[in-house]
Every structure is written in structure tokens, then in C-alpha cells.
Image (spheres, one colour):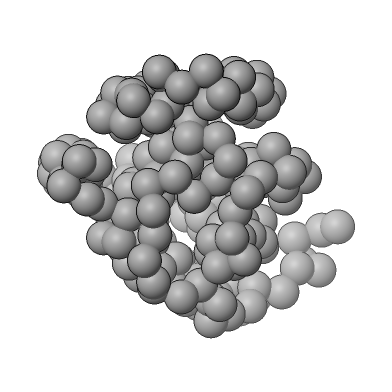
Length: 234
């Protein structure tokens, strides 16, 4: 299906901000991995919107302008929903605040770059979110085993919309900058940074919850299966 055939629809999520336990999938490792991803979304997706808005006035393509509006609407909803999730999943024994501070510092660094480099970073990061969204939709039984209907509403809604708008930042970049060397440099940098930060944060969350994640024989087997599934994404 061509991107022209995909309508970007801004939907209201069916996810309800209610009590969320630290373990919301059958595998504790998968819960920690999804939480690590979620921690990056509110600040990251607001940054994506900014980078596209920074140069929107240079876009003359009418359809792309419509796609940008859909992209902004979807990303704004994603940021709010995951912000609610992130606040609810935290507890006195499960600390996420320091990671929020780390993301804040990274966003400050990125906003100090040129508009071209900021948008190139968004293009690279949107590539990863679309890749993960595709994997989630193709293998929901691997990613979401044991999820409640409410939590499925959050992750599947997000995944569908990531697929819908995955071309927007790239098309904006190509119409304005079309600088392949910069896009390649940003992809190399983001690849290392995104993968390493996700692994580090997931590992921290696993260690905070080591009693349930590492010291439980039943969970060790489930987590090993999860690890095998996640390696297919790389």
C-alpha cells in the first residue's frame, strides 16, 4: 500500500488511566521493556512535533500539509497517554524519575542542534518507532501476552498510528533538506543511542525488580522466551 492510500486519523485512545501494576504482561521482562519504551515517548514525541513544526511553513505540498496535521494530532495524543501511564506505573520500589531527567537533558541537547539535524534525528527515531510498531502488530502474542484489554488498547492504538504516519517526517525532510549524508549520520548516531538507552533502562528496571524478574524460576523461563522474541526485532 502506498503512503498516499493511508489516511492519518487522529483517534481518541480507549486506554483508561487507572491503577497499573509493575507487572502487566505474563513476562516481567516484557513489562519492564515496554515501560522503558514508554518513558521516552512523552518528551520524544513532543520533540518530533517541534522538529516538523519548525519547518512546516516551507512545505507547499497540500497533501503533506494535511499529513503533518494528522501527525501532530496523533503524536500529541500519544504523549499524553504515555505520560499518564508513566505516572501510574511508578511506585516507591519502582523508580522512573531519574530517567525522565535524563531524557530532559537529551532533549535540551537535541534542541540546540540545527533544524536540519533535529529533523534528521526525528526521521531516524520515527524509523525505529515504526519498526517496533510493525513488530507489535505482527507478533501481538509475543509482545502482549497476558495484557489486559486496557493495556492492549494503549499499545495497539499507538502502534497503528505510528504505522500510519511513519512517512511524514521523512517526506518533510526530503522536501526541505534532502541531505542524505546528514540523514545517514543521524541514523548511525540514533541507532547506537536508542538501542543502548533502551537496554540500559530496561536493565535498571529489571534490577529494581530483581526479586520477581531474576530470582523466580518460573519467570526466568518466561523472560528467556521474551528475550528470544525481542532479539528478532534487531
